[in-house]
Image (cartoon, rainbow, N blue to C red):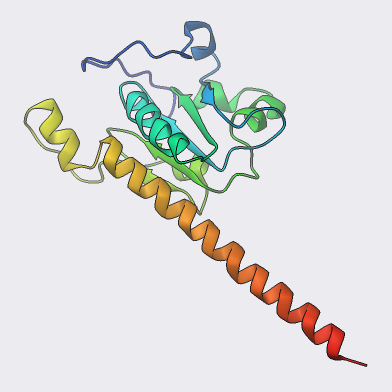
Length: 179
């Protein structure tokens, strides 16, 4: 959804619970989040249009595995960028480094929203002709691929935590040994 263009989608998609015609004017909003209270999600899945269904499907799988997942509809960057910083931080907290965006179009521009550690699922070539599901699957626009990418990000986070924990224990052990 680069720039200020709105996309009208020709694909058939469900009317998702949590979507809001009123919130669309803000450019982006939270569709669902199972984190609860003041607890932040572990990962944010960002979609537009019919890709939002993929995000919700992937979120359902991750939530069944006990993960805290937020799904965000980011339909248009410009209106979202014009929102107060508090609102943008509420929707896409800068603390959350694990983000995946899904756009059945160019991945250009999404890095700003997913961050350096995030992943962008998009089409970075001319494209393909064919049946809707065939072309979506060719480019990895399916719940299985999005879930796999999200899990790899969460696994990287877990490995980093383990390394940091081992380093911390080593530092503390060395401090205790020093007279």
